[in-house]
Amino acid sequence: MGSEAVVESSDNSVTTEPRPSSTMCVLRQRDAGFEVLMVRRSSTARFMAQAWVFPGGVVDPDDHGAAALAAVGGLANPELAPWLAAAFREVIEETGIWLTSPPFVEALDAADVFAVASSRGLKFDLDRIAYFANWITPTLIPQRFDARFFIAAVEDLAVTAIPDQREIDAAEFVVPTEALRRAGSGEWLVPFPTQKTLHQLAEFRSVDAALAEWQSREVIPIQPRMRIAPDGALEVVMPDDPGFADLEDLEPDPDVLARAA
Image (cartoon, rainbow, N blue to C red):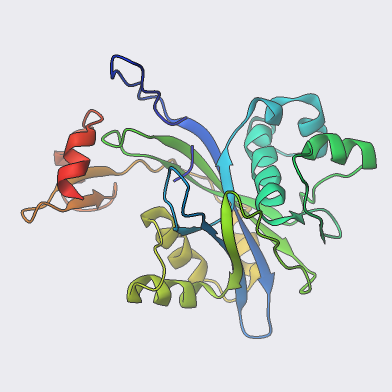
């Protein structure tokens, strides 16, 4: 789950405010269903190394800047602008895919995405995007995120990803059910929120159907709780799962996580 991670100081104190972050599910239609872009985090990543996820990351100060807001100008909900700007930026930085109309692929080497967009008069395509989920990391986890999830459709089937080889080392457009199969078989390490999103995507037969549904749906924040199972494993409990109301929001505890790992 994406975003502000806790800050550990020299006295081992932690802060628990979740960091704002964004995730983008890039979809492209095929004759038989559609595919979603997934990326594999590098083996050196401090968080979720080698996990298959959707492009995304923390909302940076630049995502609140004038150039970023101009690149997403016209958004129906202006409060979402920094999150959406971050989602577009992360897709470019990690995969080189520019979700403009038409989309194109160009990797940037340490260049400012929004400065480039401004210099070329580029704006991101807001007609084919939807904000569909808000995941907030359980309080037990020391590194917490307030992650907004978006989908974006690309019409050009020739668009392919260029992994940046820093944050990610592989990228692939994959049918959601196939990604779930790989997760279930152990071929891929896929985090819980990513799997839940893949299940949601698998319910739709087309990109247009997903856009139509999610462009009109109200997004309710989801903050799961956690409990230790009798065998010592950590269990994620969703708000609509039995027993959720009986659980408390626990304080961050790396020792509990280490024992349960």
